[in-house]
Length: 270
Ligand SMILES: [Zn+2]
Ligand SMILES: [Zn+2]
Image (cartoon, rainbow, N blue to C red; front, side):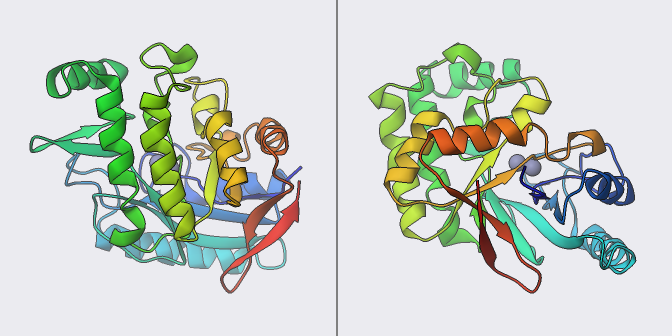
C-alpha cells in the first residue's frame, strides 16, 4: 500500500485530532511521508473558519517541532489547503481546492450541508443543478491563475451529496462538458489531480473523488494523480487507499505522485 498522505486536517482548523495525534497515527500506520494541510483563512465565506495568518504561524511552529521529533522516522511536510476564492497564504506546499461558488453576490459552500446546497441551487440557479455545476467548474478552472497550487484537491467536490446521482447525472454531457473543460485547462497548466477518499471516511460517498469517468479522461489527457485521505481525524489517515489505488489502476494510471523532502514530487508505482 501507498505509505504517504498529504491532505489532512488538525484542530488548527476543523480536524478532530491535534497535530501530535495525527503525526503519531501516521507513524504507527507505517507511513514514511506525511503532510498536514490546514484550511487557509476562509472567513470571507464562513467567519472564523480556517487559519488566520497568526494561527498559521503557530501551526508552522508546532509542526516544525514535530518534524524535528520525528526525524529519521517519518518525513513531515507542512502544507495548506487554499480556496479558489480565498486569500493566498504560504506553506511548503499548497492544495488548490474549490469549496464554494459566488453567485449573485452570495457565497455558496458546496460541501457544508446538503439541505443548504439544495436550497441555494433552487434559489440561485432556479433548481438547475447543471447550471450550478457549470459555474462551479468555470470557477475551478481559474484556480491556477489565482494562486500557486501543487495539485488540485477533490476536483468534483460538488458531488459530495450526489451519491447514486440523486441530484444530477454525472455521466451526461451537461455535466461533463464544463467538468472536462476545467480539467483540460488545469491539466494543461501542469497540475496533478488528487484522488481523495475523504467523502468515503465520512460516510457521504462510496467512491473517491474524482469520479471514474473523470479519472479515465484525466488519464487519457496524460494527467497525473496523487492519492490523499483528506482525513479530519487520526483514525482516518490513509483511509481506504486500497480502493483509491484500485480505482487509479482501473482508470489506467500506473503511478501516483508523492512529495519528497526539500520540494517537488517523485513517482511511485501503484
Ligand atoms: Zn477541501
Ligand atoms: Zn481538506
